[in-house]
Amino acid sequence: MKGGRVGRGRTLMSKMAIFLLCVGCFALGMLFTNRVWIPTESGGTVISRRRQEQEINTKLGQDKDVMGEIHKTHEAVKSLDKTISTLQMELAATRGSQESGSDALLSSTKTSHNSAPSKKKAFVVIGINTAFSSRKRRDSVRETWMPQGDKLLQLEQEKGIVIRFMIGHSATANSILDRAIDSEDAEHHDFLRLEHVEGYHELSAKTKIFFSTAVATWDAEFYVKVDDDVHVNLGMLAATLARHRSKPRVYIGCMKSGPVLSQKNVKYHEPEYWKFGEEGNKYFRHATGQIYAISKDLATYISINQAILHKYANEDVSLGAWLIGLDIEQIDERNMCCGTPPDCEWKAQAGNVCIASFDWSCSGICKSVEKIKDVHTRCGEGEGAVWGALF
Image 1 (cartoon, one colour):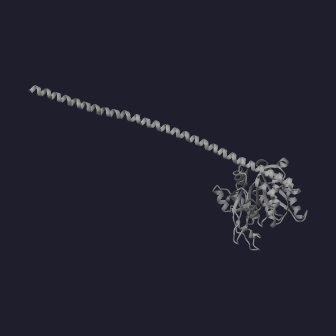
Image 2 (cartoon, one colour; image 1 turned 30 degrees about the vertical axis):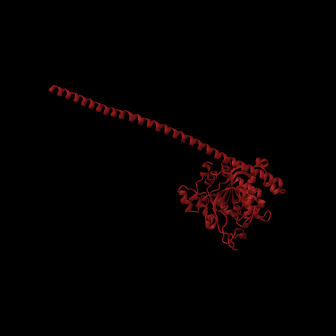
Image 3 (cartoon, rainbow, N blue to C red; image 1 turned 120 degrees about the horizontal axis):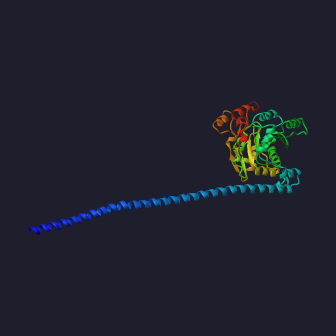
């Protein structure tokens, strides 16, 4: 009896031990499974992430390649647009010369096929508007921002920058005024004589003739008009123009929209004020007349159509009117209308050298003969800037 109880106890203990052993093995198995399986799952996740990153990087690389091709295509289209525009202007010039019976118009609208060999290539032609009475102004410009003698010629040959004082003739042939200009030109070789009778109220006509004469003489990318009482930094001007050389039709300057002055006997009176709407209206936006630039196609357009382009009282308004109906890009360049010191001096010290400086109150540098040297000293870019400029 006693032995039977002991046997049943041992059997019970064995079953309990087996049960505990099974539970332990199961726990160990679960522990082992978690330790081995989880890293395997994590490793798969890492591999999956790496594949995703590789796919993303591949896609980004493809996107960059696509953007690069789009940029190249865009540049090619702009270049083609400029070429087409130039050809259209040359074709128009050819038609104009064939249809016109005027010798003067024939002279100003020769085709590139006939006149290209005689034209000089240039990057920019700068015409400085001057008058018979402005000898001292011209000398002050020569002594500051405009190179003289061999340097003027070197600037043309090496940089393609042509600078000339533009002036017409007096109402009397071979007058003392004309002979004085002839003598000055023989000394400095820096004039462009225009077939134009000088007069303050004829600036619009003079502007048309300047562009026509310049286009007939030089094959340039840009044509600039500037007054002889404005200070110019040639390096900054050339670098600014170069940023827009891929565009076919550009009009660059300090854009403004002043009031149309209907009152008589006031400066800048507009006799045709009624064309601009109600009294008190403003002009359309146009570049201020102290300095502005237009591209080759626009200068050619003015040359071809000069006979039918209407002249308003103010030259800058006239230019804006000639261009307003064309498909052009109008660029408002505020560095072309800086004030005189301290304005341009502060900007130069901040690394933002001005293209042109003048006083708005005087429509040029006030008392420019005396003051332009100080402006040049304090706001000039330095003599070597234009020679080192890349464009």
